[in-house]
Length: 93
Image: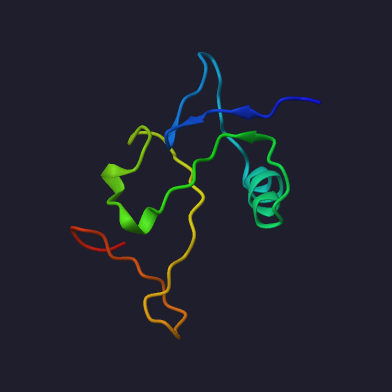
């Protein structure tokens, strides 16, 4: 059995030297998002789960100068509504 690669430690992406993660839109949807939604194993644990709506953009893990990817669940703003709660401590998304 092949060991699953895990590059996320304490919510922070830690890549080995020389490793690049530049997926195409199709790779993100098919290899990561679709598999995550269906609870299938991911090719590698490289996309951290972060509640992005509870953090300001500058507080999210990773390099601010590079593209970052996160899995996040949606929290409803109102109990019976479809609007997402996007409030952070200093504003909203």
